[in-house]
Amino acid sequence: MSPYRKILLAYDGTAESALALREAAELAKQSGAQTYLLAVLSISPTLMGVEGVGGGTLVSTELQRFQAVLEQGVRYLKDRGVEAEGHLVHGPPPEEIVRAAEAFGANLVILGYHRRKGMAKWWHTPTSSQIIDRLPCSLLVAITREQESASPVAGDRPA
Image 1 (cartoon, rainbow, N blue to C red):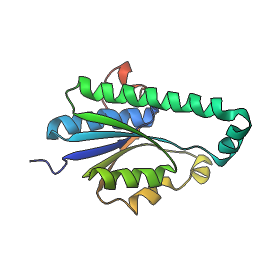
Image 2 (cartoon, rainbow, N blue to C red; image 1 turned 90 degrees about the horizontal axis):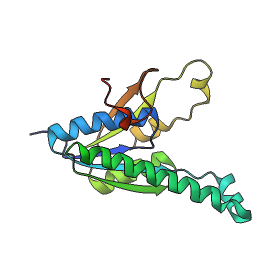
Image 3 (cartoon, helix red, strand yellow; image 1 turned 30 degrees about the vertical axis):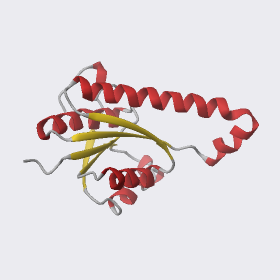
């Protein structure tokens, strides 16, 4: 019996999370795990300030986009015979991912990652270390390559 009965996947529709979605689907199908997709809408303080002066449309548009991406991910999993449910939250991604892992009793968290080169490494926030240090369970990191598809529904390309 697999130790992974509950899998949490942080999913935002990017190429990185699309690969993680495909890997989560395979693992969940093999293990019979319940899968939770988590879309984290991180609204910047600047955008929150703009909302007060007519920026509500921006937030609403982003919320709708995230909801559609989340529904697409859940549909992708269900089409492959995986028991899945989606959750949309807002806040800092590291905090929300750890909070969801604890709340759902996840045995495994899956994240997508894209290797950064040159100066991009220096400007990237330390999100991964914030998550790793606080997670109550195992972590699988799906690493994309340049040729990976940005959309899981575009086809299942081998990793």
